[in-house]
Length: 86
Ligand SMILES: [Zn+2]
Image (cartoon, rainbow, N blue to C red; front, side, top):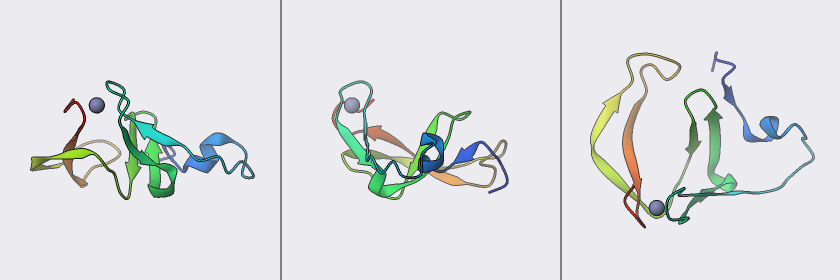
């Protein structure tokens, strides 16, 4: 990707020898939604993390296509936490 805003998780940690793994939790109910084993990339400006797989999520019914910004042309579904649906 061309944008420097997209970073790989290990690079963001600043230490390539640091193999610490993390889980991603819902900020509302703390349900575990994914982990670094399925991490793809993240974007600080967009406040998002891309995972290959997530668990305990509810998929929206509408497919959105981004028309502006770093993710232009990307198609995505909105996901809600399966624990609290936020
Ligand atoms: Zn939740």
